[in-house]
Length: 493
Ligand SMILES: Cc1ncc(COP(=O)(O)O)c(C=O)c1O
Image 1: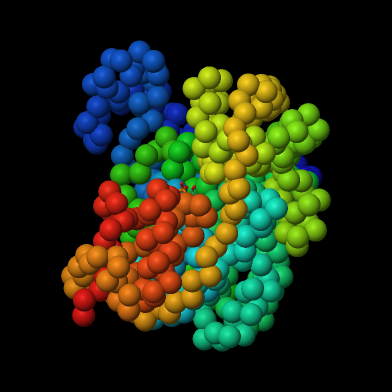
Image 2: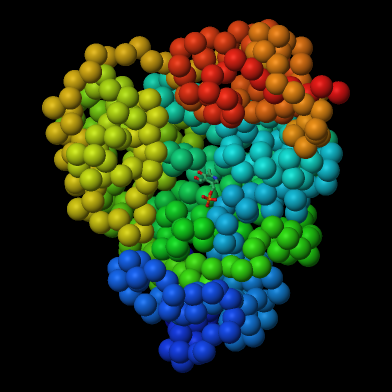
């Protein structure tokens, strides 16, 4: 991607979908099509005064001129082909419900009900949706925790190899890379191993649509040879929210099934502004991504060095440290460990928002996670680290002895998550009486944000004791559905 040929530059200067929409908007067509606001005419004045009127002329519906996302033959087809060319894959599909829908589509496209899939327990919640919709039998991998860095590492090569040796019947391996913290796993090795054994590799690359555009960033999933991968173009590149892309580059998965599934899961009224922004984001990334990300990388490296040298109570791990652990780091992410401040990441995130007008993407007890993107300027990183420096002087908490750990809670999966999740034979029972029952809900304490039980798994005495202990300590348990975790939903036969 570094050196573009002249013909490639000329090809990628084109934005077929955006151009058609622009031409359509300029013609000021009388609209007797959906949506009801009619080129923005009836949009509330408060909103229109702020945004201006023109943008709403892009908000159209499916007709010949603008093409159909479900059966593209015109500008959407050409825009998707350019996207595929940019990532050097066979096919790219525009998604208007983010990587969430792409993750579901990958399961449904690659697997049949009852197939086994190796997948990390710490995957995004849309993976559970994919597992349930597709009816696969998940083989859950417990992620590793690093107690020096206070972060979770996703599936490494050795762990996947071990799982494949143990469960040779697995049809596919599902990997998340990069993680929220920018940790990239050795995908080339994983793909190589899987393909030698005829296994499909599916990658949630929500946080990695930019990797391919700069040589100083880790290898991307498409370069590693993944069969299918999904990227949140909107998270890091310049697409509008919900704009993601599913890339297909497989000999093992049927392309027609991918097309059917992607169409089945998406709205018939896609937002054309989001679609056009995918077209423009691709052009920008191909033509200018390398230089733009050079600047983002420099700004982030400057920020990391400043924090590590000048703020004694905070720390950012570096690429060298992560490489020593057998992973790579997308250096455009900034994870700041704040445990020595005596404050939690949540508390500092709130101070940053309320007192410094700086909004982060994510925080947990231990860390702040800043997600820079193609639009980030060095001045943004400067504002962030200066605020952190000031906070480190103004606020002192008593250092806590928090330790990031995964409880060793072995259990067995006795039913497929789909069978339990969609069953009417469930009821809530007292947590203390749940031992031996099959869970019908997911319960995930934060931290570490890894489910303790998943629908279809047996609730053991240890799990019961652990959850009782967590709820008494006021630890947030996602999925509990009730104010207090006194009861749990179980399968009743
Ligand atoms: C690892 C991961 N996968 C998938 C998603 C879902 O992506 P989207 O918001 O584009 O649906 C997220 C969202 O934060 C994520 O962090």
